[in-house]
Image 1 (cartoon, rainbow, N blue to C red):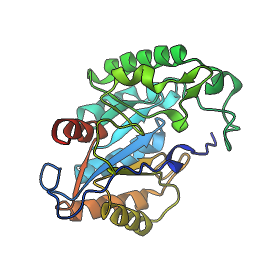
Image 2 (cartoon, rainbow, N blue to C red):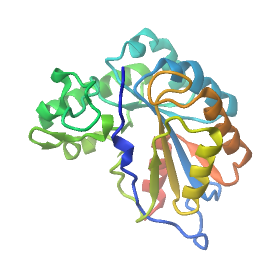
Image 3 (tube, rainbow, N blue to C red):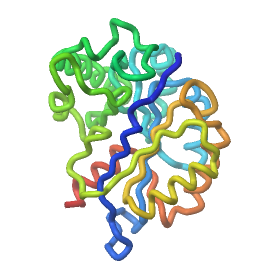
Image 4 (spheres, one colour):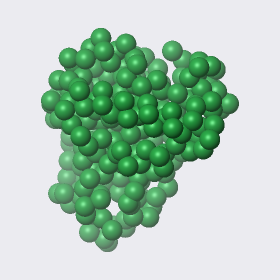
Length: 256
């Protein structure tokens, strides 16, 4: 399915922690890294999770619960959660706006422009129940599909904020100038590493939202992904790589 991302054109320019300030992270690292993977894709199970496991890093996987990959490979998603990876809510049907550029692939019946806030909350509640049936967990985070949050009767995020530890793109609470988000697509390992290094000089949290890893859509190569993980592995003193939920729970407990 062809998809064009509009979500992380939105770079979250929340505030810089300067070098003179103490690190907010558990072992004094300068930057926290959230590696997340959207849409329930085969290449994530085939390539991303084995690479993460090799380096003992934990990722956050935002499942599109109506995707055949979710239920066809349910045992593998359950194992991923047992291994410490996060399973996040990405709704059931992945509704996006057909009125936005590059969204011709959105089916008419799945157009968020025609949904209501109440419908989105109901869907997201069911998605949380489905995820609980997979991993047995209660706490959850959410990534809005395509970053589109406007329905026919308004923005649905305020109506679902009570259901989540944090929502990507509207993290609360947080210090000013805190995080930057990237959507990798086609870069080399060196290019991604350069992006991370530049961002980490200014921001305390860098979020990379992947889709395909060596296949599927909006992809980077398996080699690119592994080169990035190897870089983080060699620089553990500088980077705290963890799930989005663990990072945001730490933020909420420890940062003003």
